[in-house]
Image 1 (cartoon, rainbow, N blue to C red):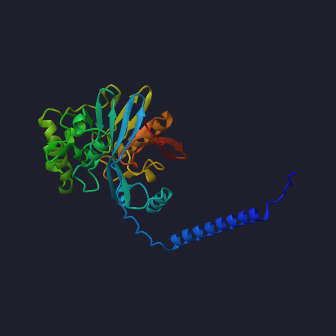
Image 2: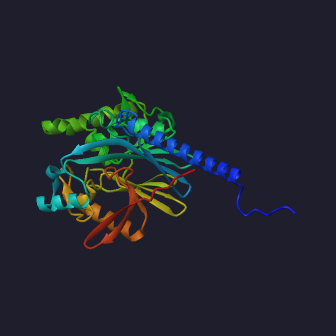
Image 3: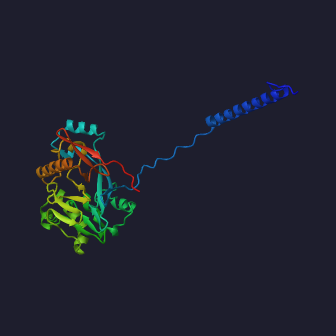
Length: 339
């Protein structure tokens, strides 16, 4: 009979112990070496800061339409000197609520609408008119997958330089195949030599910028003004909102029952003007009319719940309004990743 061993024979046991000790010792040595390596290896230099962002565009769908917000850049604006109907204490409180400081880093936005049959651009950015931090709309357009030659029509909200400067490059039409449209009240004011001649010296530049930007399109017969509320192309309508300038226009975009109202310069400073729509800006052509248009637009957007986009809201400047107290709350669009 074979004896049944319940413990390993001495030699086998010794072998097992020796193996275990060897493994334990080896593990300890490896751990120690790894720790030593981590603590004694020279640190690599920190990667240099890039301090730039990608060209700015953000895309949403509106029914069957593709809407692309295009960043022209940002500019620091001292709004404490520009806003009216608000005292300094309330202005500072408003900025703290939004975690921003003065001068305010202000976005400059344009919007590209692809209806499926037409490519329509709303405003063109500042071009060369306002320095190196602006004039980036063309780069944003290209980064978004389009070329200037593909733009069929351009609708201008108003003729301040930061909305029209991108129309030309070195005196040549930047969008060679586009028809440009704006309200005739705007054209009659900004493109008038008589208005330029009687303007104060500090104001003449605005007229000169407009004339420079529109000249190639006028010469080519591609500038076609409209008068007030006008259906421009299926799904896009001009809506008169005079006040900020004589012919300031907003644009209603609609597809499959979904709406987007593009406000242009109906408002400028979210931190102050949503809580208090009566806060105005001192370069409104007509403060009272601009305030009335802003209040009307706010109320309609909040009541109907459609999307809005604005030229100087923080990029991409798209969102919704909700009535809150005596003013309104701004709800930015939820980020959506399109396929």
